Image 1 (spheres, rainbow, N blue to C red):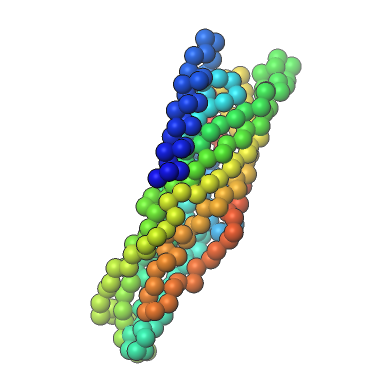
Image 2 (cartoon, one colour):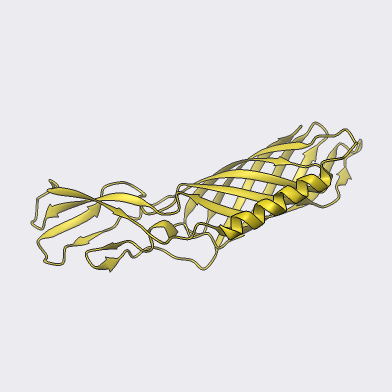
Amino acid sequence: MKNYTLFLLFFSTCLSLFAQDPEKRPLWKVELAGSLNNYDAWEVEPSVTFLPIHYVGVGLGMLFTQPYHNESIGGTSIDKQFRWSNATDHATSYFFALRPNLHFNTPKLWMGRDKDYALYLTLSPGLTLPLPANRQFSIDYFPNRPGTWTALRREQVTNEGARTVYYHLRTALTLETDGGFLFSAGYTCSDFDLYGGSRHIVIEGQKLGLPKHKLMHSVSVSLGYRF
């Protein structure tokens, strides 16, 4: 909760400091980014950014992500009488996350005969907030006999104690046309744990064996528009 409060205070301060800008120019930017990360997962992130001055703004994105390969989990009960498996695809990984961020642009390098193209770098530090932080999913129990595929019972398992706030830093090279269209290539580094919402789940006395990286690395391309 302390992290949320500090970020919101910083967010509000930036808006109040830079809200007064008499120059008429585009103040808003919308983007749609597609990414691949080192969890072998795809990412799609629509976002909106408010730029009250030329080089500083605040933004909010909604991250959608899912591994290409389903991390199927299963095992046998402690008494060896049953087999169990998760009943939902991609049950252990996050799918949604909010991404509030700050937005810093370098001065534009204008190109072309009529100076109608601009190239610049963007740096965006921010937070990644998984929704919900703790995962819940179902597991089915089957008799531990060959050829038996009918579940005898289903149980709900819920994670507890997951992190609610992660940090990320995105940098991007952007080409902007004088019509306001944007084309970007970016890289994001984060301590976001794609399976963090299921790390503490214990089934039949054991935690789940899930992939883990110290940092998540993502490469992206995006299209956008300033207005």
